[in-house]
Length: 78
Image (cartoon, rainbow, N blue to C red; front, side, top):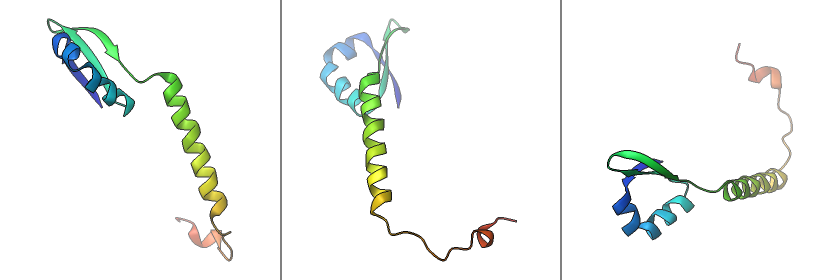
């Protein structure tokens, strides 16, 4: 989610904004209506989240029983 916020409000609610950033929110900070800065999640955190998601997905796939007896031609969308 991308949110615009004035500089005074950003200053007074900085801890709250950081919590939002940790959840993936992005903020554009404005001064007198003009965008002056962006507060966004760090690339390191994003890469770590992607790596964790891949690890969980691989674990999930490995824990599933193998599929047998499936006719892939019957699944065709023709």
